[in-house]
Length: 308
Image (cartoon, rainbow, N blue to C red; front, side, top):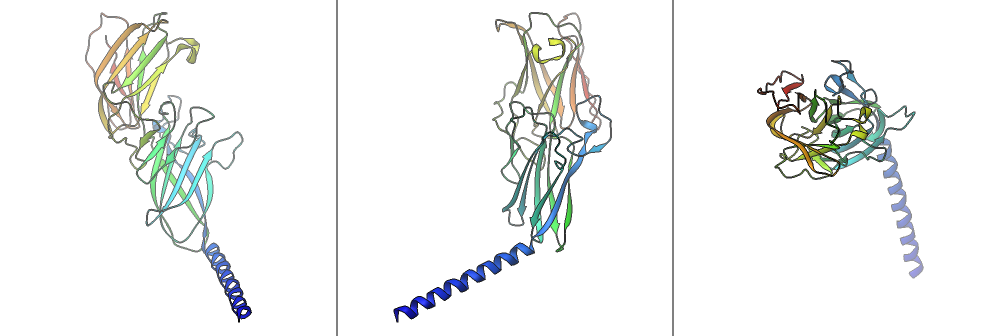
C-alpha cells in the first residue's frame, strides 16, 4: 500500500510540473515585443546659445547621457525597468526592446545629462516621484509619464516623447571685471528656505518639486574658461514647485581665506520652468541704479539688470 501511495505522489508531481511548464510557455508566448524609442526632446529651450532653435531631437542629439524607464500596469504594479547609460560608440542608446502583455500601461521615463561618468540614472519610485542623485541639479533633465496601450499580438513600437526640460535656471552674467581676490562664488536660490534634500526629488509628470527649497551651487575659477570669473556666465538649475515662481537669489563671493568679499540678494526674481532668468549688468560698480524688468513671453529668456 505504501508503494502504491508513493507512486501516486510521484505521478502527481510529474503532472503538476508538466502543467507548470506549459503555463510558463504559454505566458512567454503571449508577451509582445515592444520597441521603445526615446525621442521628442525639445531643444529650443536648452540653455545653450549655440543650439539651433525650434527643433526636436533624440536623446543622443540632445546630449542626454542617462535614461531610466519604468513600466507600470493598470493596477500600478511595476512590470518592467530599464536603465540606459551612454557609452562611447553606443549606437542603441535611444532604443530598447521590452516584452509586454496586451493591456494598458504607464511609461515613466527620466533622462538627464550626467555631471560625471560615475553618475547613475534617475531613481523612479512611482508614477509621481523620481529622484536624481547628482551633486547639483543638471540643467538638462527631462521626464514624462505616458499612457501606452498594447492591443495586438504583434510587434509594436512606442515613441517616448520627453518634450521640454523640467528645470528652471538662473544665470549670473556680470559685465564688469571680477576682482582678483574673489576665489569662489556661491549662488543660492531661496536662501532662507530649507535646503533641498539629495537625491533631488520631483514629480516626473510635471517636473515640480514638492515645495520651495533652497538650491545652492559654488563656483571656482579653476573650473571656468581662462580660470577666471570675468567674462563667464554662471548657471544654476533647479526643480521649481510650479511652472513659474518668485524667489530671492543670493550671490556671495569670498576671498582665499574664506572671508566675505561681496554679497547681494536679488529679491522676488521670476524663475520659470524650461526658461533661463539672466541677471546681466555691473555687479561691482556702485554708481548704477535701476529696477528689474522681466520678459516671460513663451520660453524666451527672462533678463533682469544686475544693478548694485
